Image (tube, rainbow, N blue to C red; front, side):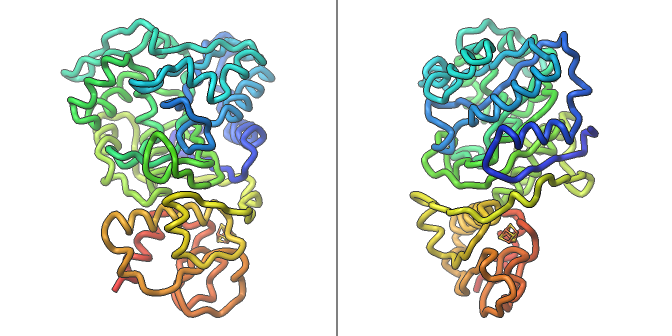
Length: 364
Ligand code: SF4
């Protein structure tokens, strides 16, 4: 595959979804059987993926099965949880111990690993040895919001590959700069984003929003730029994406990207049960048989509008979902199914960023 490609698949069953993505993208051609492959999920805290905080173990299981079937056996799962939680506890609670036992794939606790110094321009960074030693590093972030950097996905997930002392130092350096520099020092071979159920507001979960998709790409800058748009942000809103691009980690021009959607029929409508803040925002929506891929984007967009103080200026009804196909309605329609609304945003599904722009134009 080319570095400007982004492969997206919709659905709720991560094992066949990720195997189809790997098959269609043909990245397997880049992995030799003798390579030491490291899988880096996001287990920032010891909470299951249903919380919106962590990578589902089913994604990792699907990748291991696929690699085994291509005779790639030197696999490890590497992670260092955040300061204040134990990686060992996260491996257990998040279901990774079970996977390790089932497939005889070792778990590497990076909180206990030795570190090496790597110099990027004039900034010295400590990086865990096991991460640096990988021949093929597969980054498996969760697409979710973050209370300090607004957004966390491919680039920021690498922060789990540094010692705890270094994680504390990153905060004194303002987070964005060291995150971008770390991406330069620790190149990833592949990113596969768990965008099934990431959090609305915080990296530690609690407000999960179903987005029901996986996203695969080689360039972490491009992947992050694309994923940021699914939460209603532009690249310019997230300083570390721009910085990483300036450092040459990748390119974030979506107009040059080739977005390839697979199994789009799996974007089917499913029962949606938003919780907490997402449930409050959902009260603004008239939904009928809305796909979670569409509905989740709208929830994120409403959250962006609330943060910028514009949500209260939105007076019209907002319609979304397949149940409105062919209906004439007075109000704002989100997605291709609501083309009969008096004002309508096309897309199937539209990104949260395009929803934000559309709704902002309707504020009064
Ligand atoms: S536009 Fe309609 S079919 Fe497409 S994702 Fe939205 S609700 Fe589903």
